[in-house]
Image 1 (tube, rainbow, N blue to C red):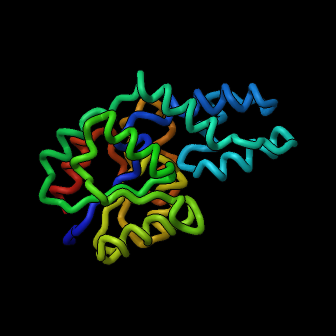
Image 2: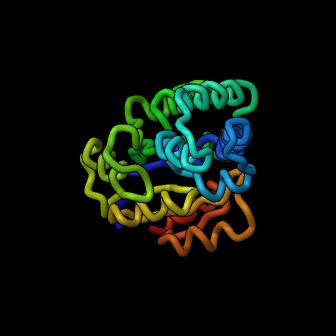
Length: 219
């Protein structure tokens, strides 16, 4: 099948950021009276929009948390500034597969994506082709952000391969009618994560960008 577009999720696919972000979230939520561990944050909030996280944390704390999104963003970017790394192999993959059109479709806010891309010196690989679930009505696991990206890039969903690391993201891409590679390369990935991604609808599972290259070469 002819693949016309690669859509990358961002956190856990390009930036090895899920663990860092969930550490910050768990600490901040606990501080606000919504006790949470890193693993609980990973299990519940990976791939979610910040406003969806905000709503859930308010329910746990049983009180309104004014300014939560802004403060969580500030704390997260401060940690990223000193600790953020790319997912192993992504730069080489982007270099070796420059013949594919590509974009990002992420649950993160545009400012966080742009900040992180610049920090990792990867912004030049995507240009303006960066799309956030903040721009659509519903976040993952609904397909809205992937369909929005396909529309903006003018590519039929059936000609798109999505690279995702979260069950909700895989579910969203599958619901959009796209092929999905579940990637297990980030530091936060647990031993049963591949099973979760397969159950969510991943077409393939890859433990590295080298394996993604092999999958694409065989299509």
